[in-house]
Image (cartoon, rainbow, N blue to C red; front, top):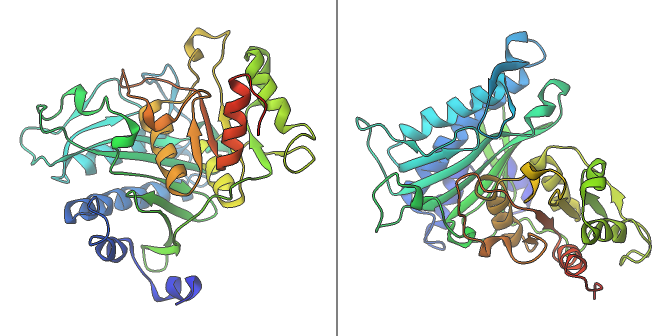
Length: 345
């Protein structure tokens, strides 16, 4: 069956996971239900985003500041509350962590608990909301530690390689879910006419090399010498193309990463040596870098912090930050080599 026909026949996420359960131990019946809860939350958020230009109360700021010191958008807050509410009541989670909340979010005592913990960024790229630019949700799922009491911090301070699943929702010209359970990466597109995410991109593969680099070059004055040398490499004629890469930067990590995964390329958010708040980069290890790294590797790509593999880093804090170089495998290898003072092979 062709991909186009498979989409028209309507393979849903639940059907796809049930087919995969025999092939992948992570895709259990409980996990299938958990992903179903996530997709319901994403549908609610997608609905609000699609109305944002019409309903003024959805746009703008709440007046609050989150744990990162960032002003909270109204849609940010809505997305956060949607996922917390649905996840706490799923009966599948031991505890939660959100990019918008300082500590571990517990499952109330009057609600059932399960064997998973989830870390999520409810609305990545929310600074672009009012400009109608593509934004997204990122999630990362771990099994709870049997040696730990449910809801403890140690259930979250893990190696990225311990993830049992990761994914993102992209709210753009269409709403998509891209996820992995450690057995390849699959993409589903929301069909509004039937209200279901249908399989549209089975076994996504990132091209080994690309022709796009994505980085906020306005920060170049704050980068160290190896970082600037890395960016200059992709702007030079020394690349495998024999000409500079094309610069594409949206400012929504999910959107930038998704484009590069489709076309090939590298996304970079390096450390900021002159801003103490960004000395280890801006991106959060647990809710942004680690899940995207898991997806990238499962699609044939790579992700490092400029030194080593992102998935080999064990988190020391819930909101720990990390530099990130992610995308096509050979592009990431080139960037990491230059960051270490070596010429690309």
